[in-house]
Length: 229
Ligand SMILES: N[C@@H](CCC(=O)N[C@@H](CS)C(=O)NCC(=O)O)C(=O)O
Image (cartoon, rainbow, N blue to C red; front, side, top):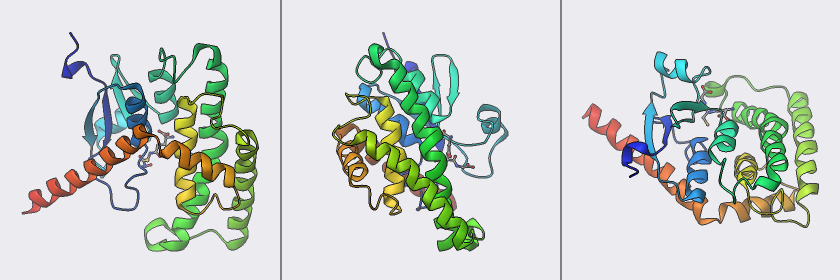
């Protein structure tokens, strides 16, 4: 009989400041497990300083990690692909190649351009935290490159709800990448992508995952407050 101990474990930070809450990438895995109806547990690693144990398990000292099937997984795209394996809805056997392509596209062709643009915006808004911002010319180039990638996805999604037909694990990753971009105003001029993000984030599984992540940070605040009291 499956026990609590058999459940997969999402490993995320023990606390983060306000600004990334709701966007920490453990949300992708929470969303996957909610879509699968898979119960899971959550454990934490220190937000800072990064522990030696954490760095031994995730070479970049990042989250999420997942303990499942006798090993620790890192890289959210790899986690989604591996843990959706065997789920006929999220990773349909006859669409495995396309779903894999779109998982890599989300991480390697889209997020690779959206993330630096988001960081540049953070540097502009708060250089005392994120460091000096790139010049306006560099930001303009970054914006143009990002828009070229977004345009490619906009074209593919025109006239369809999801990337490969039915909703799959690739949509979890792509929608999460686009969701944070939308939050920073990066999807202006891309109505199809805006509608896609709205459709994906209206799913009950996403809503549950988001609520649970936010609850995790609230509990972290409470634990911190108790520790200094
Ligand atoms: N490519 C990694 C990126 C993970 C990542 O950027 N995680 C963030 C939290 S959302 C993090 O740990 N940032 C802290 C750091 O990079 O030191 C993945 O998709 O898992």
